[in-house]
Image (cartoon, rainbow, N blue to C red; front, top):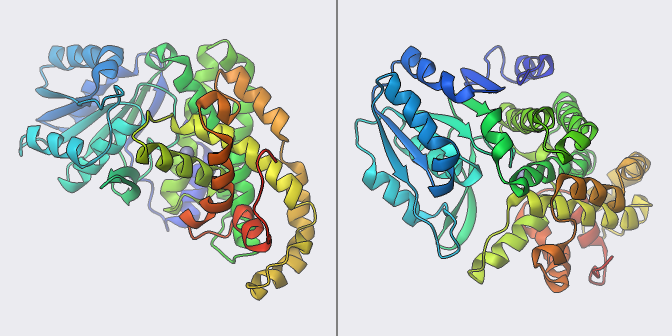
Length: 400
Ligand SMILES: [Zn+2]
């Protein structure tokens, strides 16, 4: 079940009686077939389906067929591609969607992976029109969240937009997705190994907001994915179902809390840093989750090396952190010891069929080293990465 009891509990705890504004969620075979009934129930009259060339083939055409059978009017927008063959969530693409969308459209259908969802959720939120999420790959945990990472004037920014009104994740479609997309979704989940730890550090040391139940839900989702890694390795339906449900659950936790802390720590900061570098150089973008998975192994090495005795960190310019570190150092040390080491993380990534180190993705050691020393500036969060950076006199050297 996508929305499990713990998520209901989290809603109760955090939303004072309200529930997540998503009317329907399913991860099942033949989910596409049930989209028309939902549209009729909601009485949407004028639909706009957003796809790219690949996702049109993967699910868009079939969905259009079902909508046509149900006599539902739908227009289609095939997103333009950059010179690397990717749809990009930037001003140009979004402007094109605005230009092609009739003012009478009353619901969007995002048919694709993360980027197509980001473009759709941005436009739908600006037009104050709902959208339905139809993931074509279990590739990222952002389907249900409100944050849309978009590129504005060449710089990536996360803009708060809106969540989908429904999610129809068709297992038949997800199973046919390219292996590297599913591996990227697994990488995004593996990122929780260090993001949950970082969240606890930001709470214990930085005094930032924290929620034990949310941390537990995210941890359970992660553990379930790891338990089912063999099925994922064989691209079995159940493995993909478990992964997709975990990704949605991680996204729901962010949606309830209205921040991304449980799902994004130092590993995401490294990944963002690499992404910005590729963007500057106009090089081909890499899958979000692929970068996150690889970065998780690096952060694990870093923390196991520098946070063995957290109380020893200098933190000269942050006396209030130092004080808390003296109090909670042992707790953090124990948590660092408990996270899997880089070899174990790489073993899982390899089984999932994704890259295991930066070299495999074409990311240089220099860039990794630069990110280890600079990426903590990207977010104002008290992560382990930040504690290490503000304590060390010399640069962190990579390989660690
Ligand atoms: Zn992520």
